[in-house]
Length: 380
Image 1: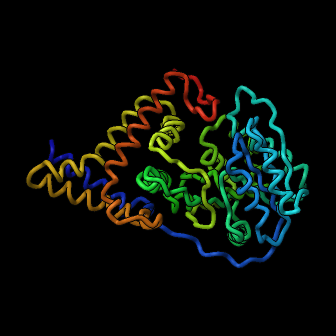
Image 2 (image 1 turned 180 degrees about the horizontal axis):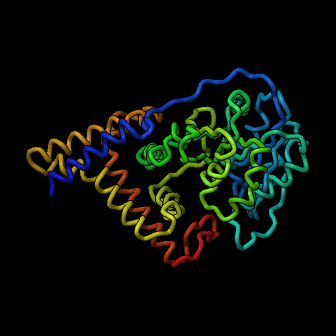
Image 3 (image 1 turned 45 degrees about the vertical axis):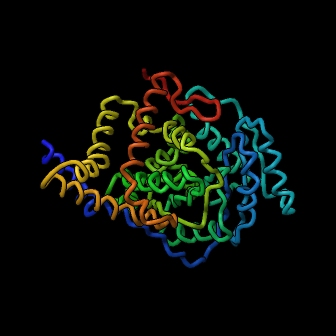
């Protein structure tokens, strides 16, 4: 039995390394030559983001995009002065006409909070800029380098993309972030290999909600934001409805970064637990499958290497080494020590616990909880 587990774990890692779209490779796209500079409206949903929204809006106003770039901030019932800070960021740059704040309407029962804010942003953007070719959905905690929007537009224009998304550089300074954040991106890429996302022959579709440039005409053909109104994982839901209408891309970048820090391990735990069970479609059997798979792929190899004997021990060591080889490019991308690649089994155990806790929270009626709002459907 132990030898069979060792063989299976090794075969899984051979498959992951060789046949899952090269998900573990870190590729940053080269900038495309800039040509036509169409009008863009950036839509920023914001709920109690006073600590970061000023820097995020300021980074949008500082862009070198040659075309018109407007910013619509949707204030989702903030109580901390988020809207005023966004307006102040524009005033500080003498650009008050470039930023408009929309006060959020009450949340309908069948919408998730962020998607409802996105929909209100699209409605206002369409009225404000009826000839705009693109909407940029970005979060209130994302700062963009000066050339980022122009480069996104250039790539979209060159390749005819309907969705151009970037997985921004996540905050990685605290001990908890250094231990856990690179693996968060690694696991996401394993679930949604970026090469498969870009392949029109595959159904895999994903995006990163912090930075999504969407071709307006394609969004309208796909049914608009209304088509994903109840989604908690809004970025991947948006990618799924857009992929049938044209090419999409998802890439890593250093040209945009998150301003939101996670000082404690508990903060990252809550972030994962908020939507992990949603990814499993609220199905207990999928949860059991996820636990079994994570145990086999990440936990078994080091246990076999350290405590088994003979062939099972060597196979466990081989699987663990393959795991380290796969994880090392992401560790290096975040400029951390090579030794962290060996800690992935412990990190996987943390994420496994958060996933189980996500199911528990859902059973308690707290699924999808974010800033005082519970959004997951009641399917207990």
